[in-house]
Amino acid sequence: MNESGDYVRLERVLGAGPFREIGQPRAVATSPSSGFIVVGGEPVQPQWHGHDVSERSRPHAGWNPVAVYRSDDLTCVHQITTLWPVNVIACHPTLPLAAIGTGQYDGGWFYGGELLMLDLTAGTAVSVLRESREVRQIVWRDAQTIDVVLAIECDEDEDEFGTTSLACSFSRAYWGGATKGTLKPPYRETPVPDGPETDPTVAATAAIEALCEERGVSWTRRRGVWAVESLPDGRILAALEDVTLECWSPDAAEPLWRLPAEGTGYQVRTSPDGRTAVALAQSPRRSRAADVITDPSVVTEVDLDAGAIRATRDATFPAVLMSRTDGWWALRDAEFVRGAATGDVVLYHPDGTRGARAELGQYDALNHFFAIRYAPDLLFLQGRPDRHWLDKWVVAVDAPEGTAHRLFPLAWDGTHLFGGRGAYLDDRSGPSLVHTGGAVGDESPLLGGRKAFVVRRAYPTGEPQWVFTADDRATDLDLDGDLVYVTFNSGELVVLRAADGTVHARQNLRVDGRPVIPLSLARLGPGRLAIGTQDGRVLVWG
Image 1 (cartoon, rainbow, N blue to C red):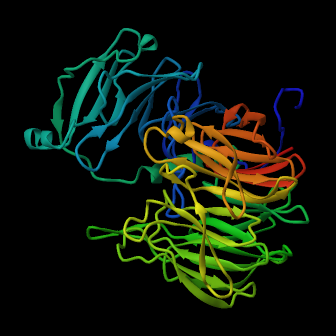
Image 2 (tube, helix red, strand yellow):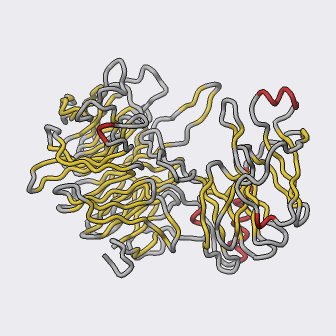
């Protein structure tokens, strides 16, 4: 423990910059009375075609960030999250107060959202509408009156009003005293024509760039560091949105090199000698007619000394990447929409030569992700042929033959569990896997009614040696000989003793007092960690 009582201390922030907390800007406003800048952002959702870590327990709010910044130096002073995306922000003409409109159509019936009043001095927000409604526009007419455009409540209202947009006004003598549910229906709404569909990020991004330029700094978008790895010489690799792979020296202000991506870098596996790496990137899903299309993943083999691409290969399917310690690696077909998907596993020799193929059945991001560091075998999860999400087993695929062997059931008492991240460990207690996962459904007797777990299991037989349970999804795991490091989507780092699973330390991760959400983790050395965050930073802790 350090003097603050924390287990680890933040040493360095890689990828830092102004307005980093909000991801992609969606709405920007400046308070005329206080000079604060209020920004609503769009984060990377904590899920991709290979893995889903988006579910977390109450009382956590949604993922959508709103941050308050000082105008003079752009320091973040407050940060909250909202349940729905931010559509509009309007600052009160005389009070340090911002009205924030959030919401969206749920795709099937309702238009949900909130009208929030954010106290810019205290950093607290209240939802003032008594019912959930999407808020599309806000204008302060004067210090007492606010004009708002709401969405209709549900689809059937469009037939009645001939539009999905309804205008109304609210007046109060003093808006600083508004409390939760202050504004009660009926709202005496008037139908107004729907405005043109526009991308709010375009204007918001231009506003952020202008604010930065006025202050002599620059803004670049960084979001979603899905993978970090350490190299023997101390360098750190990261994969994130728009970046297949980048390489940092821990004390550098800029990356040593960067390989851009048309999409997001999600996974990276380094060779046993640390000289090369294989990185997996994925373009965004796209729509075609009534279908959602996931394009094949792009796999890049990289020379880590020069940051040069050795080879690029388009997988024939959206893939997940697995590897073992001798350098063999594999791509598994992660196509979920296509019902005929076989879950092919294609093996690759350490030199990149394509090898044998195995079939493990259909894959989905919730059930089948199983990424194990330092594994002596290529490990996967396999379900039933007819119902692939049930009765999952841990299987090893031999290289070079491509033969699959069942090792042990994922669930040690028949409960419906799903996989996650983990690491292989061979210590005084013998060879084992320490891995994360969770329960499908609201309650799991196996986990004492909680949603997530970390388990140590004998390898290759699978007997559980200890179980740690949690309420929120684990996002990544690494270990050394004595300790297991686990990050959670609540923003917490938990350190467990490898021998018995007891808690050695736990800490809520913060940067300059503001909470961050960890998506990835790698051990740099004894007591030192690199943690990749949802907002695009790489944090070096020691």
